[in-house]
Amino acid sequence: MKKLVVTVFVLALALTGLFAQTEINPADTGVVTAQQKLKEISVSKMEDAGFWYGVFPGDNGLMEIRSFPGGPLEKEAIADEEANGIAEPDENVVGAKVSFYRRGVIDFTLKPIRPLPIEGITKTVSVWVAGRNSNHRMELLVTDHFGNDAIIPMGKLNFSGWKKLTVTIPPNIIQRNYHYADRMGISIVGFNIKCDIDETYGRYYIYFDDIRAVTDLFAEESRDTDDMMDAW
Image (cartoon, rainbow, N blue to C red):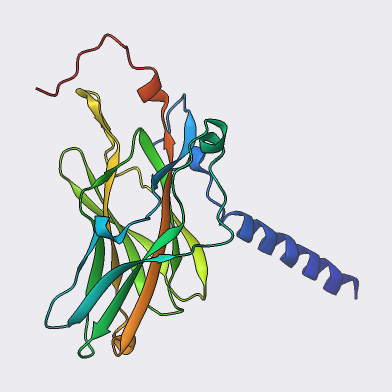
């Protein structure tokens, strides 16, 4: 009996450590420097569907983009925005409806009309998603200041209701080059959905809200005020 109790206790400790490792600590991820100044910032509150468009092959079906009032109840305000009295509208979400013509290996993409730049060195990117409990997978599409594209998996959409999906920006994505002090960070250029072939039928609905990033602003705030900008 004592052996059984000890075994259960050790197993519980192991599981606790496993679940603890799933939490993302932005200070220890991505590009790590000796001095960091991490802040959570709002990239887009996704209020207006007019700033977004869908990419979907016409021979696979139709894709519609609309704004809807609402949002996740668990979403918390950014502390710095409240402290500085920033009160941006945050009442809507952006929804996408895909009507499939036939089954197949299909992707569809939601893109902003202009890339969404993130100041500083980005550690993590998060977005609230209502994925309708499907086996489709979502990817984050980013680009750097030199035009290099990257695709970062965000996970499967097999959950009900709203869920905050967070992804770490890997260090192999170059966000800073010491030759170009004015070119730093990444820009978000869209979210790609890789559809599960068994679920490419009928209509599929997905909703997005509140893109945020945790970014290191130390280099931005320590830049000399009299330095010239290479923008001519």
